[in-house]
Length: 68
Image (cartoon, rainbow, N blue to C red; front, top):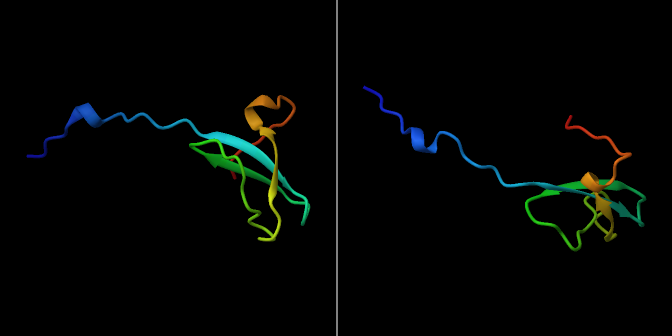
């Protein structure tokens, strides 16, 4: 007989922060979803430039986004 433990049925997921970044080297816009707010990040496109922080997407009301 299978016995399920119902105390761990629902787990609390950590809050994800979605931030927008811009690379001055290759002119790419990057969004990063992370559990922690990042202070700096390398560009994953050109791997040469550092990313410039543009803001959190939750604080930009004109921007709409979705997962694809």
